[in-house]
Amino acid sequence: MTSLKSVWGVITAFHPDDLGPAVTRLISQTTGVVVVDDGSGAGAEQQLSVARAAGAEVVALPHNVGIAAALNVGVRHALAQGADAVVTFDQDSSVPSDFVKRLRELHDELSQTAQAPVVVVPQYFASVDQTVHRGRGAPLSARNAIQSGMLIPHDVVEKVGFFREELFIDLVDTEYALRCEVAGVFAYGVPGLRLEHHLGGRYRPRGALLRRVGVVTLSSPFRYYYRVRNRTLIEKDYLRHFPARLLRDGIIDRLHFAFALLLSRPRRTMWRVLRTGARDGRRGVGGRIPPAEAALARTISWRAVLHEDS
Image (cartoon, rainbow, N blue to C red; front, side, top):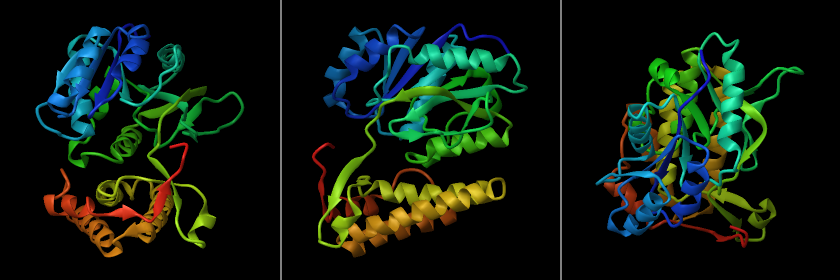
């Protein structure tokens, strides 16, 4: 394996509100930047024009196809331009000025001895340490790394493939990381490197008892359909490969789902959304949330108030 010469940034966007700074920071660090708008419609044109003016190539999809498919459009576009690797980003990730340089440096260092291609990520995604600490002097191994800030070389795509589009959204990066490991491709973290990112809405539960829990992070209600369904799909496909890890992660997720159910109003509606997600996962159903469940999810609210620093 050789050092990377052409690295492109891929940004996925959906109803973006400030693409200029992200594109500007990446243009100076990469060979090129492609922004893929995931069916936002005419309302996003002003921001897409800002991205073009800042130097990005823009692909505006006519319909919302989900983050996995949007990422694949961007990755294919970059590889067609001759990219040796891509670094993928969400629209609201805040990229440091030396971010891509440090990813490339670790990749090139590891490539001197690695027997297979490697994926490289920052050690920290927002406040989350994505790495598993090994012995002194050993590289930081990353598990279940978030795709925003992930450097994916061309030879990884050739060996592992693209993101799994039927997942649509949520756990898309988790599935990709597991598929990489099954194929003998491992991810490593750049020590100390951090990608700032806003992780969902932070809420303070209402009620004397629930307030003792403190501030919690909750997704939009419709996202829980995807989170339950995709967790079920991933367990079906990978539990035999990673039993301890997936059992642990599954318990953590299900505890969170139970807490989200406790905070939801009406609770019966949230239960139906969760139950339908689990059912579709067991049946192997992918794609967009069914219209009836999406409509129900829009009626759900949280028995909580947004925390003031959200």
